[in-house]
Amino acid sequence: MVAVIHSTVIMLNLNSIMVGTMQPKVMAECYEQIFQKKPDMKDGEWSGWSVGSSFFTVGHHSKMEGKTKDPGRLMFNLETTEVKEEFDRIKEIKGITVIKEPYEMQGMWIATFADPDGNYFQLMSPWEE
Image 1 (cartoon, rainbow, N blue to C red):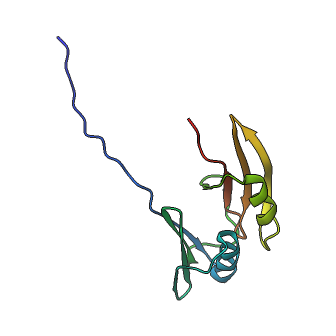
Image 2: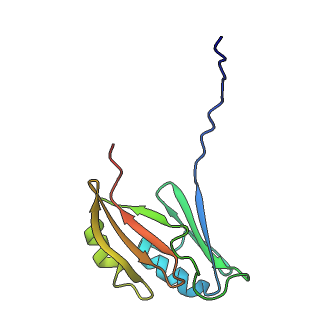
């Protein structure tokens, strides 16, 4: 006898990322340069940008102190077909630290940075199956 189990597939959509900081002005200025546009939302010490199909927000969070202690624990990727060119542009932004220069992995290009709080983010070429 074979038991058949039916399951419902739930599709989740990551629609936003929030980065808490004790230096919201510095972080907002940095991400304004990364995204090359003024925030789409500004409310007190919070700034947010529509980026692709997601919303990215930085703002004051009283529980944060100094730089992140585990910068690689959670990373977000910014997709671009121009990883090398965007790398050259972003590495010049005040407060940005280069963690890893562009490299190829299984046909994709990746580069890793840290923002002024030390949070890691990556540039990544589009995923091709």
